[in-house]
Image 1 (cartoon, rainbow, N blue to C red):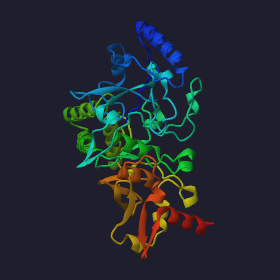
Image 2 (image 1 turned 30 degrees about the vertical axis):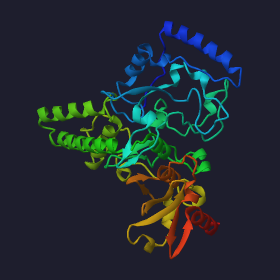
Image 3 (image 1 turned 120 degrees about the horizontal axis):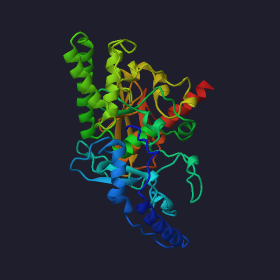
Image 4 (image 1 turned 180 degrees about the horizontal axis):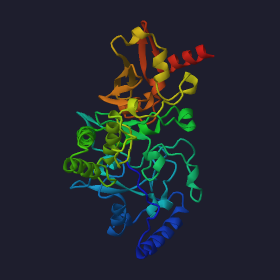
Length: 392
């Protein structure tokens, strides 16, 4: 995910005039709480589509996959008609014709279809829009809302996602969890990765290949300081792969940064101009882990809990997690570093892992997952409560 600056986005005057008339009709219809609202799909028109494409190129704002022949959507970041899980309320109908609420999305991010091997990755974003707090009503400021889904037009959100060498999107560990995430035992990055299937087969394979290529180009550039022809070729290729409009450029920019760090040249006269959209490997990112001295102060992931378990529990480097969902038994693997492997994908938090395993957007992973230590089977929640009690 790269930041998309839409601050200067405006609609053509003729389009805006028609949109104002449509919005007035919606306002009149919305006065009847029982009336179903209908929308004229003006956001599909070239007048808007072309201006959105001009901001970052012909690619998805969420996963950065290019629109070649695949369908794309002008997504309403805040759903216009309904919000999944809130049948008693309408969606953000008053934002239906507001270009600031539009995001370009590929079919997989918006409507599903991505795969984890033989497993469906889920329905995509669609009308899902969970919050960490209260939902705004018509006329209220949206600044008070705390969306779970990362927003590419918010620079701070885009900076939260990094990558590992296998091409998996991950949370950048040098960014601490917010107070709202801690209060809800939820990680916005993990939930965004899960809902949008940002670690589907296509994406991880493509990003892994891209990361390897960028690292090779950086090594080539650094090794050929006296050969201007080779260095220029490598530099040109790196610039092409890391430019904002390039496909999966956040992963490419992260790979560039990692390669520089690996060569211990980040402050050198050979420093590259490209940016760093994330960290391919947190251990060499130059960042620091957020404080996690006690389980009470770190309630989102499992790093503190894993550190408290007896060493023999991880004699095989992993521990089996089990749970029972609506679709039957669910399984995952807890690794010694605190990450959870589900469908062969890494997640940092038990709740997102449980929701990925079950397809249930409401399940609490701490009470869902159980593991066996020293012959006793307990939930993650029980283990955490015991650790908190011991610390107290």
